[in-house]
Length: 314
Image (cartoon, rainbow, N blue to C red; front, side, top):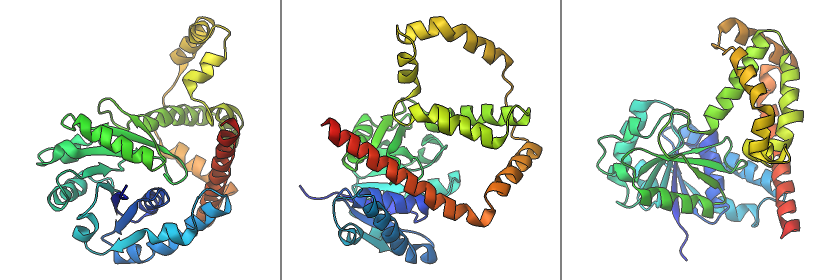
């Protein structure tokens, strides 16, 4: 079967990671960026990331083979002309996305899928009025998609079911874990769940219940231990002998009482400045990139562990 052609628009962190996702799964990738400086640095950065994956035995082919599937294109038209799917990764600006999608609709094959990596903008905000709007959708990844496989698929009211199904098949073939967001909602699923947790954590911090470090510990060494391999619904299903219904009967009143006392966080500057100062005392700003690389290597180790567990269970 002939390899699919993918166009990745935007060569920042997300765009480079998407290029790796598709290339390591056998797809041909053309990478475009309006900035020549960004584009010229993309392949060296991609090669370094693929080498990191190789060090954790997370790729099945030599580094050079995977990187060779990625080509940079200075012209948008050259990048998208033969694409089966276009993955857009430009700034979160509605007008800029709308202008780009109009161009993509004009330059691509009529059956090419046009997907945006936007983390919060519904597809309807930038695809209305486009002739080929039925093939446009959001495919929201987690940063970086080369290490975190979730991708949220969400169409506009006019996105066809065929578009969602074909996109889901491509992302599954690329090793991702697509989920369907059944109708548009700001922030989709992941950021709404993350936002609720952040809101409560920041509120607890603002009210002085705990330090930032201790709240991080609660998640890292508490909730995240289970959430790294099962979701919240399965977690509560296993936390009572009779499953979800039993859990709700036992603890529903407690959670209702907690909800009645919850104070939402308004993202106040004073609290955020205090939080930033606490974080900078632990991690100076100039070391954030270094720590981000450490995070990525820890994610690689987790992926390697999950792959080993899957192999052992086979």
